[in-house]
Each structure stands twice: as C-alpha cells, then as structure tokens.
Length: 187
Image 1 (cartoon, rainbow, N blue to C red):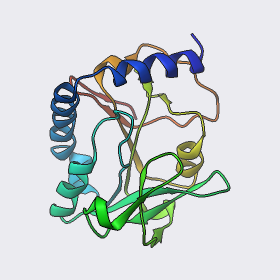
Image 2: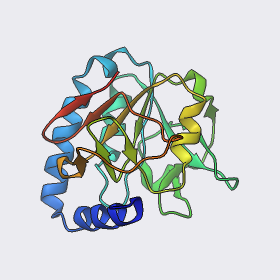
Image 3: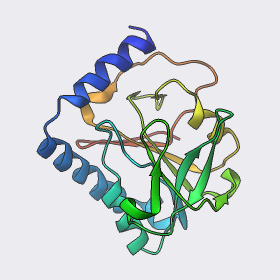
Image 4: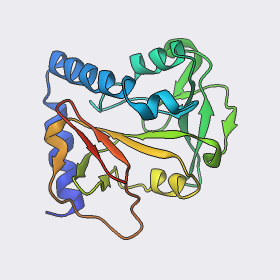
C-alpha cells in the first residue's frame, strides 16, 4: 500500500469513530503523556490544534498551561513552512483563527525558533513500530524538525500503528509514539 492509499484509509477510519470513542481514547493518550518523564522535563512544548478527528489536543493545551509549561502551536506560512507560536490563552473562540486547512492558530504570533523547543508533539495519519510517521504529505513537520533538537513525540490511536509504513529518506523519525493502548519508544 502506498502513502496516498494509507492516508485515505486511516483518515476515513478516524472519521468513523464515535465522539465518545474519540474523546475517551484521546483522554487515555493525554494521561500517558502527562505522566511521562519527557513531559515533566520539558519547559516548552509544541503541540498541535486537532482537526479531522486527530487525537484531541484542545483540552490538553489547557492542562499544559496549568502545569506551567510554555505551549506553542504551529502556524503555517505561505512558503510551505511553519513556525512555532506562543500560546497565551486557551480561549480558542476569541484568541485564535482557523488557517486555510481549518486548523486553529494564534491570532497574535510571537514565534520561538525550532532550536529552542524542548518537545514537539506531532499529529499523524499513521506510524510504524520503527518510529516512522505518516503525515498529510506537506512535509511541514519534517522541515520544521530538521532545525530542532527537540524530543519528538507523536499521538495516534492504536489502530493507526503498523509494523511498517512507506517512508522516504527525508522523513524524520520520532522518539516516542503514544496511543490509547501503548507507548512505543525509539532512541
């Protein structure tokens, strides 16, 4: 199966999850993440604002702020790059706008260089046990991670984990994958 076919299948499978299943599985992932050594050690964390039934993050952003973490969110730029913007509020209705992909981004952009981020939590469509991540195909995270020494974690539901997924040499591996049923650690 190629990347395109796998993306299509996984996005559809995620879309078919009931709201209660999506919420409960996301909550299990949050619990594992918040108890991790890497979370405790990180001063700043780049999360993502969920969309399209990705693992929920909007409530997690508030919890991270409550834990005195500096939270950052990606902001997509016109030149197919992204930057990390400081989150100053968890009021998504007033302090954020939706970008061209329908993803919340802070209205006020105070960016932080990728090289100064302790942990990046990446969204994904699928992953494998060798720590490869399948994103949406734009390469935004791969390019951003290139300039970072951050610990890279990924959130996905357990049905999105495979023994092997197609990947390219430029695809960046993760250090940890957290699902509703397991934690997979790499290097």
